[in-house]
Length: 405
Image 1 (spheres, rainbow, N blue to C red):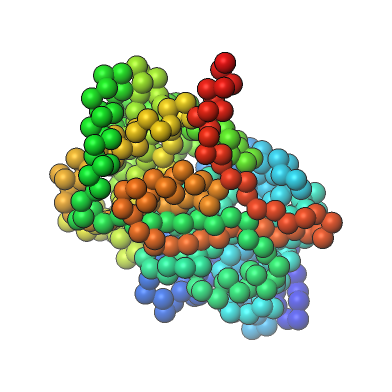
Image 2: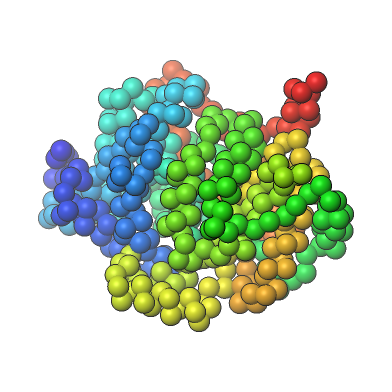
C-alpha cells in the first residue's frame, strides 16, 4: 500500500527492502543522541514475525515507513490489534507503536492517521500508544521525564514526541514510573527485620530459577501471575509458550540467581524477575548481532561491564500479600548481589499509577525516581467519554479471603 500526502509517501512494509528501511529510521532519528541504545534488529523483527510472536494467533499487525518528497526516510509506525484485549474495553481498542519521526506535526499526524484508519476499518474505536504487540514489559509507553540510559526493553524517545502525541489528540491513560536503587547504600533496617521474620517461617521456601526445571518454573510463574493480576483492568492470562520463548532468547545474558520464587508448602505464591541490563553491551552493536558482535558480547560479558540490572516484574498472590514475601525475596537477591559486586544499580520498572501497592514497595526499599513514561489513548469518536486506567484495589487480599468464605 502506498499513500501520498502533499508529496509525502506512506509505504507498507512488505519485503526485505522496506524491512531494512523500517529498521533504519531510528538510526537516522537518533544519529546524534549519545544516550539512545539501538534495539537489536532481529529482536524488533521477531515481534512482526508470526512464527515467533504468538500474539498473531489472536491478533494482527501492520507497519509503515514515511518518506519525504525526495524519498528520504522521515518516520515509521506500526498498528496492531490484540483481539484478546481489544474488546474488553468500553470501546474496542487497538494499539500503535514503534513510532519514530522527525520533529514535524505534518509527518507525525500522517503516521497517526494511517494507524487510525487501519484500526477503524477493523472495528476499533480507539488506539493506545505507544505500546507493543506483545506483553507490556518491553516497548511500552512514551518517555516524558528522565532522559537517561534506557534499561533493557524500556522505550526511549526524544522529548518532542510528547508534543506530537498530545497535539494530535492522544490523552493520558496511565503513567508508568521507574525507580533506581543504589546497591551501594544499605537497605532500611526495618526491611531486613521483616525479611528475617518471613525467612524463619518453615512453611515458606525461597528458590531461584534454573534452566533444568524451566518448564516447572514457567508454569509456577503463570500460576502466580494469573492470580496476582486478576483484579487488574482488562486482565488476560499469561501465555506459557511466550514465557518460554522469552527465557530462551534471554539465555545468553540471563542470570538464574536473579529470578526468584516463593513457595508456601510447595504452592507457588510469589516471584520476581530481574535481567542484567544487556543494553550496556548491545549499545555498541548498532542493532546488528552478527558473528563478530556475538564474540564481542561474550568478551564484554566476561569483563563484567554490566553494572545495572532491571527488575522487570514481580507478583504475589492476593491471599499472601502483606506477609512480607517481597522482603524475603529482596534479602535473597541482596545476598546474590554481594557475590556480584560489579552490579551497583537496579532499575525497578515500570510501575503504573494503577498499582499503588507496588509503588509503596519501591519507596520502602529506598529507591528514588528515575523515569516517567505515559501510555496514551486516542478516541476516534467524541461520543465516548475519556477514561483513565482503573486502580488495582489495595484490598485484594481481603477480596480473595471473603470470596472463599
